[in-house]
Image (cartoon, helix red, strand yellow):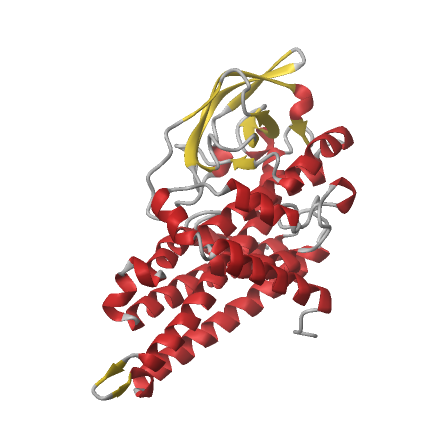
Length: 384
């Protein structure tokens, strides 16, 4: 085993770190406070190859792997966790089109997705189908050479702002095998959006319901075969879980660095609080959890890189679920501990720790709740 990053991966990490420092970090507070979706900055990230990281280079992607993506998203999240997370969702949607789209779709859509001239969202969750995603009720009824979609999706990142929606809809009977993946373009008659949700965090990206009312979409907009949509969604989520785990680690790493700097200069009882053994133990635990989570994440990313995306592998899905659960829980604890070490100052916007806390809390819910991650792991242990 070699735990060191390759020279190329270190170069990607350094490029992402520099971009996060120069483009994300100086603006993150104003984006958060103003609920600003920084499309120009996202397109600047895309110019560095960060919008289609594991999309094939023949259609404009960077042609990299999941480990590269984990390294990149960790660094980007140090600058703005919310914006990095949106970029990870756009990457997931683009990858689905690359792997399951017809050649005509791939060549027509992916070069624009790679530059973020076209912005993509992923639509799975519904008001009545969250963790039980296979129970989704949005329907796509075949009418000649079109599908007619009716239903709604909830909590969609980019809802109303994105140009292209990868929609999971029911084309057949109940259960996962009745679901297909269909591309719906903004401006299609019958497609509308709810109001931008007012959220605890992730304020630099819009979140809204996506609504279909007799929305007619050509059958040629389907990716994959009829009935293959749920498998596509789950394959996308294996990688999406790693990306969101990486975003948690980026926030945690940034907050740990800030906590170390703070306890060195903050004095109480006549000396720096870094001299108190109890605080030293807490910092040591934070650093250890961060490193353990990073190793688990990188191992899962390497396993996903070796997997055929079109063939289900429960062991790889288990590895991704373990990494997502552990890293997002650890990331939240580390950020919360950093806030505690800052005392009252950690609660102030000027110190920014509170923004990292608000932005990382949702990571334990989305891309499959951490309770569902435990179910996935337990199922893989108990099923024959």
